[in-house]
Amino acid sequence: MLLTRASEYALLSLALIGESGEPKDVDTLSKQLGISKSFLAKILQSLAKHGILISYKGAKGGFALKKKFSDISIMEVINAAEGKSPAVFECSPSQSSCPSDRGMQCIIWPFLNRLQNKIDGFLENLTLKDILEK
Image (cartoon, rainbow, N blue to C red; front, side):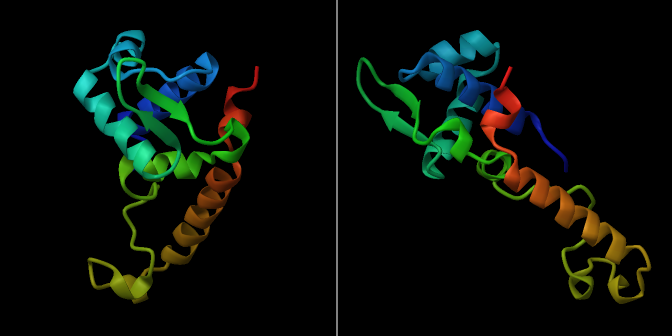
């Protein structure tokens, strides 16, 4: 799994919410982005559950950023939107837990593991501010 639409919509939603400076409701965001209201609601609720957004109820309710763009890592957004860390390969994070039971004999696992670690580090250090700066 690389990034799915859930991650894409999470990033787009966060950009719109952050630019507005005030809470945005799901209906408005789904119309702006042209995506399903129910799918977006699940994503935003997950972002709130993971401490990225604050949810406000009522007539002026909606979602607002809980942190500044510079304090929100892309890895954090992906984990919240996907429910797990992004995996570039279907390899197991440890040779001993390989689903094919051949992990200890896999000659490319060390390379794949190093590559995944580099990607994880890159996404952890990349923030919303970094990708949204113009």
